[in-house]
Image 1 (cartoon, rainbow, N blue to C red):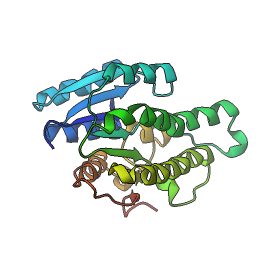
Image 2 (image 1 turned 120 degrees about the vertical axis):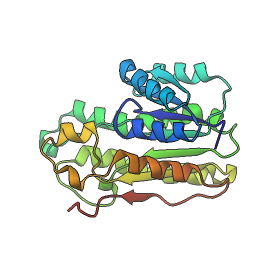
Image 3 (image 1 turned 180 degrees about the vertical axis):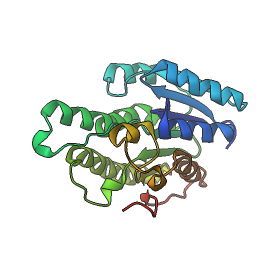
Length: 233
């Protein structure tokens, strides 16, 4: 998979960072996308220490104009992998979730991957083995209370992934969603500061699965799947 290029959103920390480092170890040039430039530059420095290459694009994936500018900056560059990893979390009863919170969760977790994927489709079509990998959540497979907005967004992402996979099947562009259970990331720590980390999935494990899917031969894909710790209840 040498001389390949990957766009990874949410690359400044957590699972996105782990995916970027995993790709970089395989010689893949990583385009790091996220809101906080300092975090992205930190990951870029980690990649450089591994002997890899990365570029930083600090932008908010919910900003349509910024996403359009990003696509314009790439021009006709070939993109081999797009990993939509940026996301946000909300734990709240439906009755306590206001419209602004709902809109934010839907924009980050569903609308942003849609818009970015649509923007980069011309670049992905230039690849001889393109992958679009969306990071979902265990909530697409189980029902949990107090996450109705987040669940709505991730279930929507699952449906979008399946539909796009069918659309792009004739072009042999794989589109897959990997849905981890609770992971040991800063987002999880902020949402559940007292959680037992022994029941969490390591971001590096998720990154390994993303890399495995992106490494499949052209014309080969897999169904969407969940990935979770057997200690989780």
